[in-house]
Length: 338
Image (cartoon, rainbow, N blue to C red; front, side, top):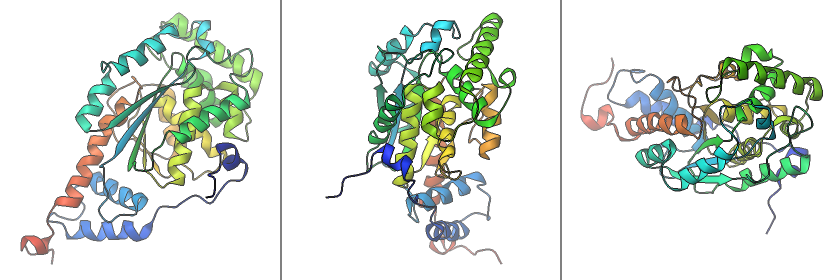
């Protein structure tokens, strides 16, 4: 039996990734044209159903095994006072997840999503990336491998989320380096920091960009420089989903940034991903513009932990319910369009 390639091997020898299947997408389009409604009258719901059909390779796509992976990591840069909360809150929130008390618990229960919360070495925060690389390349590969291996084969839609105090600081540094944008423009208040803390956050990120530069050729290098383990894990999970042609719902700012690092490997690698919602973080709108992705929702959310993606999954479920179960004109005995 042939051993599956590791993330390190995949990144070194970039494989031919599965593509969107136009055959099944066209079958889904044909079905939409036959349903008992004026063509296009369900708007984006029709587009979402067709998108799911093309990635799942099914005329009638499914959401029977939706999995939400929430990765948790701690960031050494939190010691610089860039967040409203101390890093100890990350572990406390993980316990809250396990006890069923977080927003994502309620949303996953509502949407019938299997939730897995995966803490990654919370007792060992990354290094302060304004003074040194956040992680060694070995640590980054290990976190990416963990994310890659966390995806089950029976998953038909993957939802990704994260939690980690100071991860919007890491996400802003990565996005400013990745897209060559000014820190002042793309830095937000995260968990609700004061104007003084925001000034400090901007200063810390600028210092980090001066230290590490903005020219990166691989996801591993940029994640090693600025990222958290949870962000590297998200990148690994996105990679695994593309290899298995599993559609993905990305949550908000930090999650989208983590996935965006994979564009250093392949510009088209995120075609199997939808962005669930537009975060209140100012950098998110800019990233979505660069990625040419329109969020499903805009609810002024900035919680993270996969919450926006869990809500967006209900929109996807609505798209599939209408696509799969509506009668066609022939089935209903109705006259179609002349």
